[in-house]
Length: 329
Ligand code: UDP
Image (cartoon, rainbow, N blue to C red; front, top):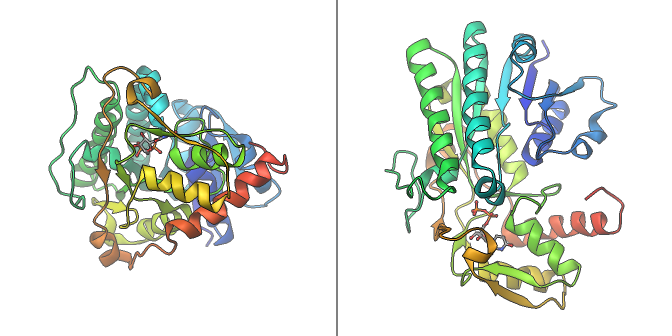
């Protein structure tokens, strides 16, 4: 029997890749997206496929969501406020979207005992410095006066809720904490560093490193994250559990800028922009963020397949096509 998926946020960067992979693997997939940060262009190439359908609406539309959840076997809940810039600028939208939507998805899925995957984020680890982040580590967040932390706090509530539904009501739900993910179709519009650097390098604009550039991130190929999502919902051992998904090799943002400049053979200058100027006064960045992935490796044999230069090569091809007007920006 064909498996049926509902992908919330399916017109977003990760959601659109997930939807395509599900269709390729014989699933039926329905996308709901309000196009707030997603784009219809991300799913335009799927419109002709028989097992694909979509609704442009908010996941807060209760009667609609009740119907869509009912029609699915598995709900991949990816709809959320994303991107550090958006989060700092629009904290009300961030908190409300993240918490209300997840509450609704879990409540509706629980009524019909549907399988659910909640997409969480490495932001929940807060600002701890050094070492690989383990799922059960303690968390240190900044104060409520710094709006960045509302993202982590709202996603933690989502996680608490998901785990509560699993424990108290037996809902088959798993949580993935997604670390920095990159790939074609990601936009730099909401602050994500890799598409920003690649676009800046290709258009000969300054490459804007925030702070001193010594902060470190580990970047993961979107295809690896998607494979993990599909494997996790299929695995009964994942229920009621939280898993990191990411890459274990990290890089400083300063080196990332140099690598992008080199791979694109760009003449762009690398410039340093203070955090307060880039985001907001009092902005706190995270010095380092690397996952421990052994829990997911044990469950599904997860292993990242691409390293940074290979990922960048693919992204550069995609961004060149965008700039040439072959695909929409
Ligand atoms: N960053 C940067 N220049 C940019 C955009 C981001 O130096 O134009 C930095 C940002 O301050 C952070 C890192 O790159 O240290 C990753 O930023 P992103 O927003 O992609 O992800 P996150 O902060 O959530 O890890």
